Amino acid sequence: MDARRGQASAQRGAKAQPGGVLVVGVDALLAIREQTPDARIILLTTFDGDEDIYRGLRSGAKGYMLKDSPREELLECIHAVSEGKTWLPPAIAQKLATRVGSSDLTNREMEVLHLMVEGKSNKEIGSALFISEGTVKIHVNHILEKLGVSGRSAAITVALKRGIVHLNGGAGESAGGGGVTSKN
Image 1 (cartoon, rainbow, N blue to C red):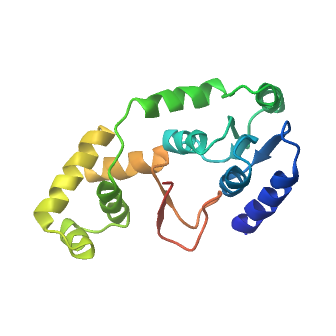
Image 2: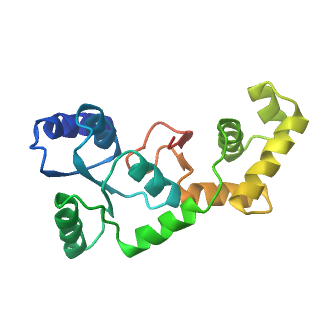
């Protein structure tokens, strides 16, 4: 359902005037940026993890607002973006600053993290990825180090809170049929 709304928003966005400001979700943002790279887009979302914010801005959003933001804040954001500026509420800017100072996980570390979130053991992760259990342990240690935690449970908690991974089936733009998704 969200993907269809995103496509509809993208079609409306492609017809919008270049100087206008669009307030959209994640799916529409990506589709509009493909068709109109210079579009001024505000991402309106429920996701407030530092990784979500980083990816949204990296994808071309000029503003990042939460759906429960006060009306005045949303209007301020719209005015700033319409003038060609980037605008973030202070709480979002603080989370973004946290993200900028952290290390990125590699693609393989992301695969291992997804399987950790699904509750797989090192042996099961190794089998799924066709790597040795020792190699899995190395990846897990890198994940723990990069997330600044000391255990698997803490890594999973931090990854979910920061928006590095999302559990499917919950509310929000990436709801689906179960499992884990990444916002790459």
